[in-house]
Image 1: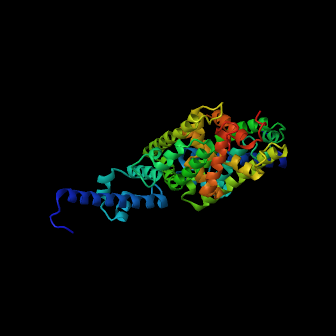
Image 2: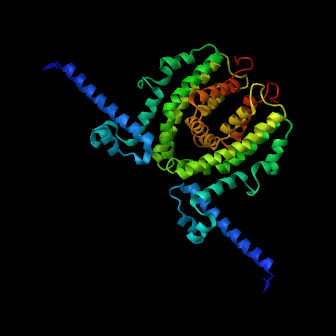
Image 3: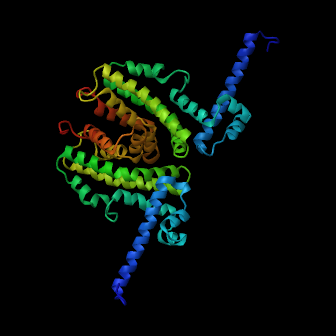
Length: 218
Length: 218
């Protein structure tokens, strides 16, 4: 390593270190929330697991709730956590697909992949939300975020004239929002042992039958 | 009141008293579980609320889990808790309905009414099941019971030749089971503020579009 590195390099280095610490904290919290749930996970445990002080966790994130919120958003955005879902290459291609049945198929596959990561964290938010108002508000906020992303799918279908004549874009978004809920995905996984692929095949069929104008199903 | 009442009367009287005590315990437990959840509800509280000893609660029901189980089954069966759902007059009439669209409409209305009572109790079972294996097994058992009742609906549709040609009775039962889940009902009620009527209208549309052969939708 260079001695007396120029300032820009040093601050990049420091920023890199800070990013590493942040990632370690988020990684530790992710594992703890998924395995122990909301109540049993503490800032002290997250800090210990990440090899930092509780102080560092607080000053970096503010609260346990803020960490869980970032984890859910990160799980939705997968590889590029700083880019909103609908602006990412994969989902953007789905929204631009001109063939209705293919749009729905690709959407169903992509959302099943998102749900694998997100559903367990949303279950943590939901189970905590019955006890704590701060988590109840987070639960609502995250579902509103889902709604915004999924409305874009309904709008894409409307744009290519694919919706049933008796169905509004809003009603289509309602249906997409319900059928892609982490709640339903978790139920099917836990009680029916449905795989992500199985979920995606069923979702595709329901959306094709439930949303598309007759004759557009293949 | 008669002195020296004949034995049959006295044992009926005693049985009536016992039934009253049982009902008081179940009523107390129902209110406590719905408002405080699984963990915060204790046998001692149930006893106090019902005006009996904890001993009486234990000897009558065995455990907190057994009480919650009876409450869920009672909520499914509504007015006649000793008669299985599919043998009750209303649901039996739905299963015997010869018109597919009318069968689905009546089923959707009836199940929405059931879910109003059941969904909050299933949420108690579900939230407890993340912590306690005895509740996880109850959660699975209750969903298997739902499955049995709902398979009867899929079979009724198959019997009148109403299912899509590419859909098996089992696949139809899967879809009915998922769309009528307390999990989805609770999500729609809590986050979207959908009323039971709103739920039933949406469910009817999804089942008609998703299950019925083309041309049978009205």
